[in-house]
Length: 595
Image (cartoon, rainbow, N blue to C red; front, top):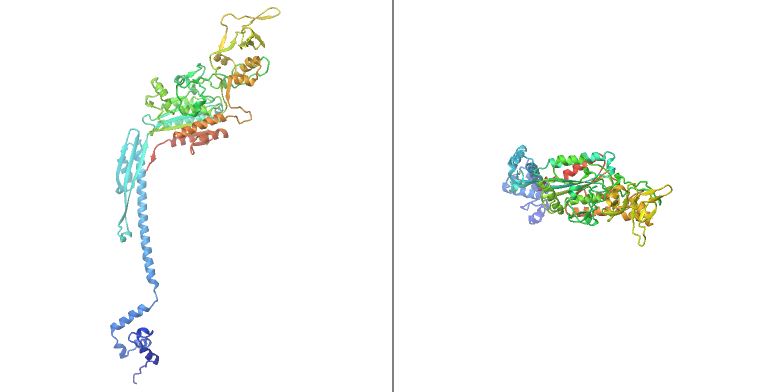
């Protein structure tokens, strides 16, 4: 049969007459693409006569016009970007992990090498440290600065991390350097422990626990000391501060006596830190200003003798202030011998504690060194507040709150008094009643006499007062207070003969800094204010003031809390007192990471 050929349609013929580029569906030579496609698979001689180059061109054109699979290109680009970012992150994480490890090793090695208790050289310590961490390759060098009381070590390192992915961008490795530095400086440390020894400390084992905690603190602080860098002073206080005869001799003291050794601090001494030894200060009169007696309007011997437990400055040498010591045995013995008695004057304790940190006390320290009372190593102390080599620390501890301070008024502490005592135990007092001839009042007779009482001669029916001869038995004020209570003297020897009120008579002899209220709280605003002033002055000079309220009432805890900086107040109970002292000791350590 003859081969049949399909003729092109009229449509195809008409389209073929137009330019092929302007007619969709026509092939490049103007033929109908549909017919060409039908002829592509045939074995017609026409298909075989199409050149191979033309077929390739047509295939490329078809590929160009075909839009199927166009998102593959975008997907490939995104995948490549993600691979690059992820690879960069891997390189950075490897670098950061290595850098952190080397930096930590450098800091730790510097701390170990800077310890002044370290026997090996800083180079040996650092090299051994890096070898143990398998980081010897990262160690560049060790710099050191060692002095008498300090050791400064700097460890220099280099971290190098080879990149797995970033090298495709030409970044073959990441590098960094680090200098870990540590310093231990045996700074001159001046410590003052201001400890409450009021009567309430003698209950609930409080004094026993205070002694244990304070002794441990002293032993640890001085046990770590090398080269006499740490001095510790102890200021026990109750209603007063017993400074003792040795320290008292260094100051300008008036109204001297030898019955006890406290001073009545001038009010102006609380408004400044300087505590000059040349400032006149009256010695506290050893008098019972607190205990009451019979306050009736008639004669009475009841409660005329002083009560020793309520003398504001009890004569207890064990409670003497200790100035600048580094003798562990001496300090331990003194702390263990402390006795609790009396009232609470926190402001007075802080005043003396601050004095032992103030440079104005330097002449006192020098004199005590010459007398062999203080180690020669402490010559020049207390240091200046701006001395960068000195750390000043004050620990203020109480278990109570302020009790109104009391002391005998000026003019009644020492010297001659107008009071006379006869051998029969009776007293008389001279009052200058102008225009009167009878100026001696004899309380047990409730009468005025022209002479002091010197006894009497009695007949069968009456007694006649004996006219004294010679000097008689006049008393000075210290002898008066040794025999009599202040309130008894006020009532029997001033109120009754002068006709004044008992309060007026007591105020004439005694000054009370506040009011005592049986239902509380006591009026102690003056004492609280003085304490706050001193605390502010100390903190302004960068003195590290720590406060401990040991089972104290709210009032006492608040004044201590307000006195110190945040983080340096401890409100503790029972055995926690020891932990408070341990924390304070830890905060005084000078080993620190500085870079």
